[in-house]
Length: 295
Ligand code: GLU
Image 1 (cartoon, rainbow, N blue to C red):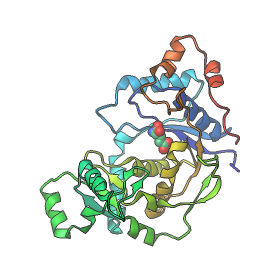
Image 2: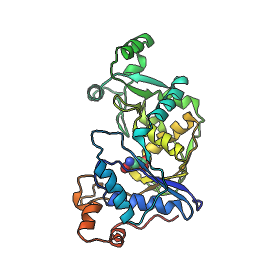
Image 3: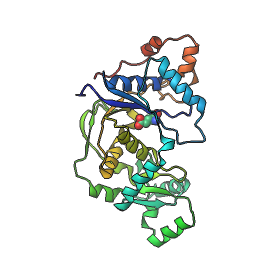
Image 4: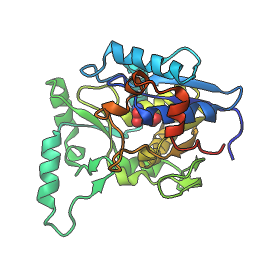
């Protein structure tokens, strides 16, 4: 049961026009905040090659048109590098991260090559599980390659991380999850293997940034699409390792097109700007969407 007053957020990327799926996510987030609650916006704007000022303006225009208002300030992930560095420092101090110099291609090639072996590498929610190549580098070797400015990511040492947290790490699901999961759920983050926490070209991966930022914004309830339900297991682990509070979660259904595919930036015809230009009203939009989850 959700208490009535929550701090929730809507976290779009300003890399394209908002569509019906975003409208639903934003409406759920505002409704879940409850009367007197706080509804916040956070821009996931770290991909500088795809972010555009007009998309950011479009987000504000679309949200206002839908009748939504949010509490300032808006958080921008592009201004949060220092917070991510501090979080990584905390994990490094516990010896829970290591540098990884492998390219995506190398990892995929190793995955394919392993498929014929009896104990082949597994797939995780984010792709092939990392086989652990760089975990076994000698420390002097890693230091030398970092000093030589070799591009590298930072990975979580999953086995060690699991050894430092309580056996019964849980989160509360206030929605229905992709398979009807609700209530207290036991987090099982191991399926991610040694997840990437910082990339060669970004100070934080999605998983690290979302956990650090939800805590910094004081989010008490995270509403988001069912596609992110698996990620919540990893987020709960990161919260425990970083000593951050665990918000509740409300995963909601995804809006799909006529072929059952999740709406994406390519669905221009279903962008809110296009629908608005076609004469649709905010009420029409709400009628096109599923009912909001019950709070
Ligand atoms: N930016 C993500 C998305 O649009 C949301 C991430 C989250 O809510 O945790 O799917």
